[in-house]
Length: 449
Image 1 (cartoon, rainbow, N blue to C red):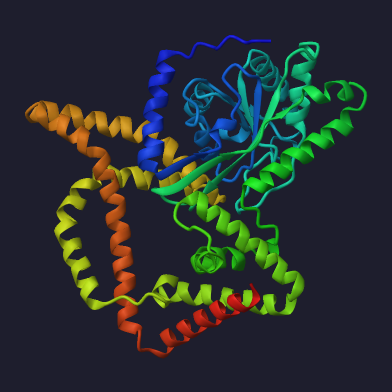
Image 2 (image 1 turned 135 degrees about the horizontal axis):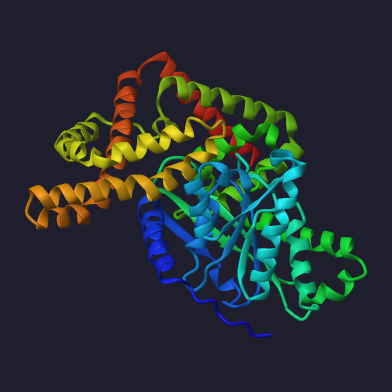
């Protein structure tokens, strides 16, 4: 049954373009949409199901994949309770609340009926709905328990049409080079759509059996798409190995290692090999993980980074870097308006939450909705009053570049200080011990893998 494409409001398009620019150009360094051709065509009833690791950033990444539709997103209800303006904003971009027993309590569950009725109708009208069956975001790169509410909602929507409407479930995953800060890389990767039509007849007699079958299919696809570190007891050690030794692993395996999609494939292969090594030689892997955690702690205390243990800094390069830092300093000072406020105000909201995964949500939402419009508009008005007309125009054009300068200048100097510290300590016993531990881990990985 062919559905009509819903008309997208003009103001929504403008607002979405503004958010897309901030998301794709300023907040992230590079964004990837992998297998986007697997997304069913517009007006095809579709439920996208994904892993959930980064609060609001996960649905935003999917939202900006679409240009021809306004999808709905089912997300945790407590986000809507942060502030009345946040509530209106989230609903404006298509998010709807899901109330959970463990968080909002049993009495709140009845509110889900309104959300499910809206989404079921949207599906039958050919809409796209995004759901996160883990019911809450994870704080690590692993896949949690799957609720089957998304399947029940899909079949209930089909039942409303007397099982005449073909509904698809599209597995997907989100992946980040880093969860914290800005100018990281982000990727959304889609799997193969699963049509529910072949299951309609069996569902009417054995709904639980069908639900388990489809849930297993969806979960298996998502596990295959994402990095799923299941050895949670050794998660910190595995994640440290992944971040600091994967490039050597990729070179040994002859795997490409450049962009984020390639790095994800390397990560998956590396973690799989570590799991196999644990099965074959558990004592050796346990000793390796213990040594990795020691190295991680030593690096933290030394205020350095792993790269300097195998790629030594030189005074010549660092003197040039210091000169560059001095020359850029006046421009950096100028870039602090309003970027310093953008960072500090966004951070201040994160400090109030125990969960660090809220950082990206507050950093993006607070700045997109309040800081950028208020500070930019104020600056433009003041410049227009006290300066020639071209000054506010030039400032608007340069403002995004100043945002990037403000961020990268700090990162530049942080690395510079680490390099100088490494040079000043490279002949010390502690530095020699660090390098020896690093080389021992590298040799052990080569042997075990």
